[in-house]
Image (cartoon, rainbow over the protein chains, first blue to last red):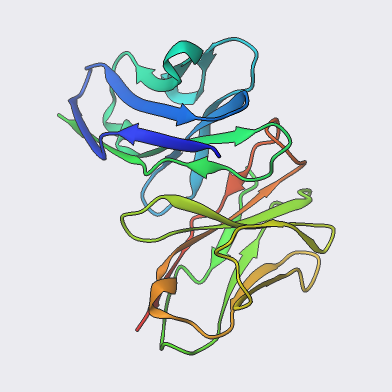
Amino acid sequence: AQSVTQLGSHVSVSEGALVLLRCNYSSSVPPYLFWYVQYPNQGLQLLLKYTSAATLVKGINGFEAEFKKSETSFHLTKPSAHMSDAAEYFCAVMTQGAQKLVFGQGTRLTINP
Amino acid sequence: EPEVTQTPSHQVTQMGQEVILRCVPISNHLYFYWYRQILGQKVEFLVSFYNNEISEKSEIFDDQFSVERPDGSNFTLKIRSTKLEDSAMYFCASSEGQGSLETQYFGPGTRLLVL
């Protein structure tokens, strides 16, 4: 069975600082990995996804994530935080041929001015 | 940009009542999904639907739940007799195709409160 663990339910960074949101997965088969973002009163929006091509994946809004099989990790980073990045971020896993996403518990990102 | 919409945004109901949550998927999408998030817990898959049939469901999706595509645009989730533990945020999603290469687009959710 697959699972996802997001370390830190709340992360707070200063504007301009590095954003690092951690995600570790467990999967018995090669996984596909996703990061979604939810802004207030909106749906989950796909930031980026890893589907076994390049291990460093670039997404929207300057975010990127690196798939590290040896560490079973897919951490999300952004070099310089903007106030507009304040949102809830969800890491998710899916196995090939599956239909469902398996989500982590989410990390709420707060940006301090 | 096309988006998934859901109505209502909030619903309060009494235990034992039936509720219907409505979703309008993106128009050219063929696969539809319901997920839910109980407060403080993970987003959980409930069911996927394709070609007017359930294609996969979780153990949460018991006989109290049903899904339907009553017309060409709506996709509904019905809970026949609500329980307190059904209180959650319910998300609808749709995708053009199936599988990991297809992005699932999510709606803003319906927050259901069962009293």
